[in-house]
Length: 167
Image 1 (cartoon, rainbow, N blue to C red):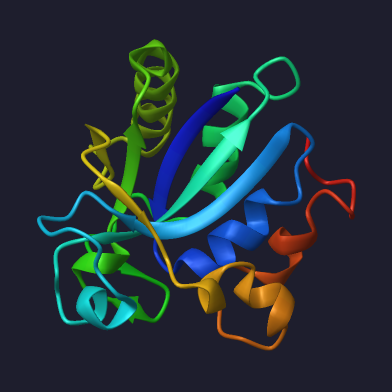
Image 2 (image 1 turned 45 degrees about the vertical axis):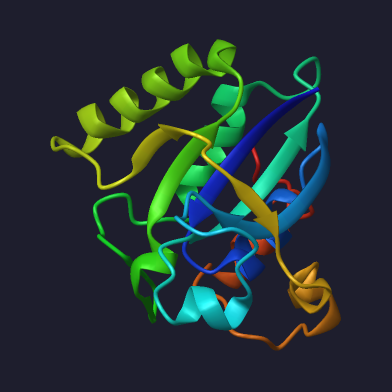
């Protein structure tokens, strides 16, 4: 089992997106790499410095970290600073955080591939995980509980696996 922590704008859609793939064992929304302990959603929205992040636990024998990151780059604008869709602020920054250095070669290769494709540096933080605090229960699987909730991710991407377009 491996884990990536992916900040990609609002965590509701990112969690729903990653839940669809074989090999993703568990996802959890939370707040990462901020300066304080145990922030609440209210704190994060008031510029606590944490990023809305999805913890993605995956079975590397089923899905490679490079594939997880390929999917990640499908749902973000990697050149946007502190903004994804209509969501704006430091909590919506993009970031790839890790607590296992064995994932760093895959992370660096994935970032370089996207940089080469678009021809400029990305605005995606790549950093060791400093901290991760689980978000309140009502944020877990939010778009499953509230299917009409706002999401910056195109609806067809939330059903990528079901539609057979995940290759």
